Image 1 (tube, helix red, strand yellow):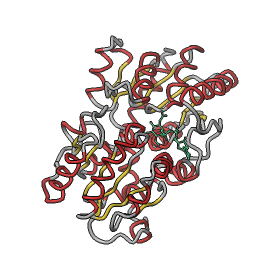
Image 2 (tube, rainbow, N blue to C red; image 1 turned 180 degrees about the vertical axis):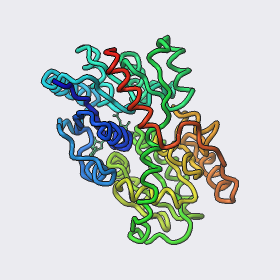
Image 3 (cartoon, protein in one colour; image 1 turned 135 degrees about the vertical axis):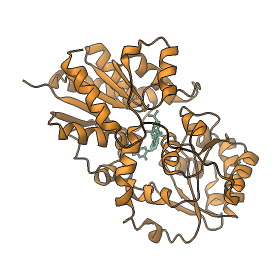
Image 4 (cartoon, rainbow, N blue to C red; image 1 turned 120 degrees about the vertical axis):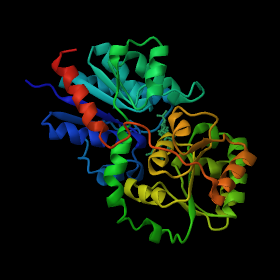
Length: 367
Ligand code: UD1
């Protein structure tokens, strides 16, 4: 009996990483199980991405939902273990750094099932970020570590990981970006939001920014001043909207002249919005990479990044949540002094092909 490969998704940033890998392995005739843990469950945080990315409905949906870190991680582990026992996969593929990623990798390590981690080796060196804990644990136990850039290899080697587990394949999220750029041009989002002329896209969801009233207030102050110079389009993550209201800051956000506040938006609409923007202000990991690939200046509202190549080679500037620094960097960009960059090696739209080669070789060697 052939053994399937299980591809795991859980939260919004996972979908655009798994879609190209699923398509490539399906093209090669592999038996696949697409498993969604349900960490993100709202249609606009999940289903719209399956539709936009042309992914089939998940074969298995665990329906985990929201909860504390321990709850999410433990519940995914309990349910995923049952799935692995029933399906006896040849390999499990996990991506990124969310709670579902680490939970499934631990299950594989205990059941001695081969696990490949896509986007391995990224480090912010900031253990206050829950994602950093997830990255360190996943990389320490997964069998194949597929890195997007040389810094990933260096970090893994410095942690004592044997070189034979590390394969540099490039950035798979950029496969999705390039293959959907043309389709995104049909998006009506700019008309729907009545955007005219130049605008900046804003996204925020990191606990360090939006769960902390003081930091949230500093960022809001910067947005008020930047919003006086350029229209801001701000799709709100559920966590951000909830906290803005709880901290009594929502009315200030709404009062920024010309700001457009919307709920989370789908993949194609977001790519369209980003691709025509003048500037992106964000605390997302994925957007730092996508803006570098598109050549759009990005100002990252974090103290550090696990994606340093977007700064050394790309268009990204790290400013933290210092109001003055956010404003001066944004104003420089608006006067045409934004950071230019180059697209890093292997961010070429062909990463899923390299990943499929590595996975199938690993399986055929019976590693
Ligand atoms: C998670 C990931 C983070 C990723 C982010 C992208 C972890 C530790 N964090 O953070 O790395 O960048 O996803 O969004 O895995 N909610 C909804 N609908 C949903 C999902 C969440 O309303 O479909 C609300 C819930 O109130 C929930 C809150 O958003 O409590 C936060 O969701 P959660 O999955 O805990 O973490 P994220 O902040 O989304």
